[in-house]
Amino acid sequence: MCNIITHMDADGVISAYLIVKYVEKPKRIYFSNPSIIKDSIARSILGEDNLDKLYILDIGGNEIALRLAAVYNRTIWIDHHQWAPIKHYDNVEIHIAYEPSAAAVIGNLYMIFDNMIEVANNLDQNKPSNVREIKFRDMISALRFYKGRAIEYALENLVYKMAEKDIDRIIEENNELIESFIDEIKKLENEIKANTKKFIIKDYKVTVIETKANIPVYKIQEIIDDDWDILVVKFTRFNREFVYTKLEFRSKGPDILKVAIPLGGGGHIKAAGASLKGIITLDQLLSALNIFL
Image (cartoon, rainbow, N blue to C red; front, side):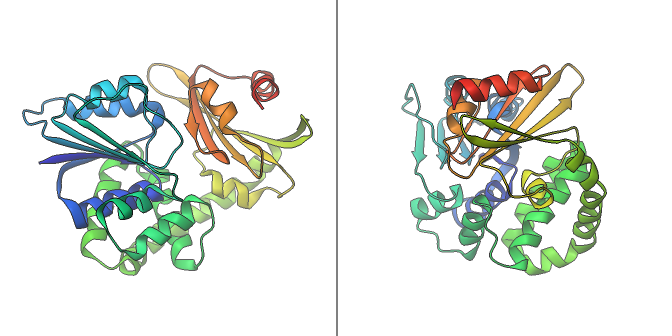
């Protein structure tokens, strides 16, 4: 019996679906991101007597996470983000290929031909090709927006439904939730626009948006104007122990990964992110851009 840890975006959900439908059924699916991957692996180990196999999908790794993953008898780590393992473990297989999505890497690895791989490719590049893809992405965002602490179970349930039902039927069943989510985003448009600031850094047009709202970056891109080379969305988040700052970077040209990596993050050249403990001021953010761009 295996466990799956995957990213909680469209590509991560589709990646988990591909494993569940075509490779093997897991005992549990966990949803994570690069900043908490070590915690997610540790959580998957708790209370387990059988640590036979673990799949990690669509998430960049680090040395601590790799060491934890090696506790399993066999770990298969599949990703398309740009990172290189520092140390190798005999029981940890790492498959990194610079494909448009992690789902595409899985498809190539296991010879899977499924239309949802193209959906993952399009959405992970923020290029939805039809209404179906737009609604699928909004459905995942709506679940993340409304489900709070129950989000992991909601996404896990979605993966199992995808393995059994037609995706159009699932979208239809969630249409009311999707429409409610879109209405909530519309209510936040004025706040987003009011918190938008523009700068010139090293001849690049940089747009910075500061918000506490749990809004997907692609929705923010739909709200603001398109006159930027680099977009930074700065989220301030709170949990029971501390405040932290989540940074999302998007670029139309410059290598934004050069900024994310020194801040402890990762991703791609044109789409990256980082999470840091504490409140990062706007001046500190602008200084980081000046230093690392």
